[in-house]
Length: 148
Image 1: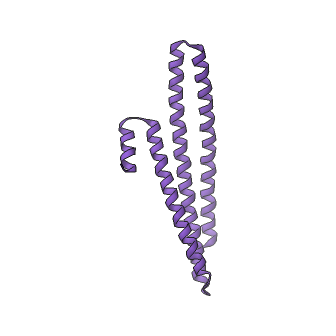
Image 2: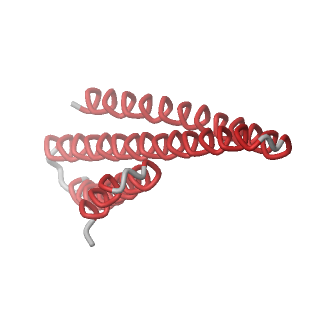
Image 3: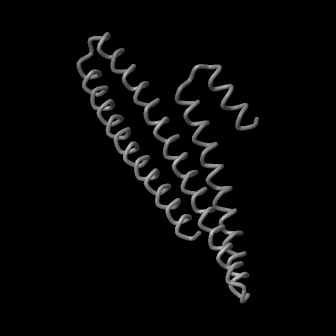
């Protein structure tokens, strides 16, 4: 089953956690591809450094910087997808809290409240990771501009 098939299947089942997890796997795959392309581009840069043609070397440096932008964007996508998973888990945990409240079981309510608080902290932590990833994208783009 392809990535798109799994995502479509999860969406059809209206399972927000499965949808978020499928999106995360896709984002991780894109990041892995970008990292592999960077390795190739860096090797090409090393080969060009052996030439005397500074224009070729400069062009290779720009290509490496651009590859780093792609990686930063892919990492940002992963962070976004991880945030989606955390938010989906929070919604599930909040639903469990509501069930516990309806049951009248005070111990279950206390445990569910603790689980909700833990999930809210995970969401906040992931939101910070997303902001950090977006800042890394901006830095990588600045490096491209500088390399040009």
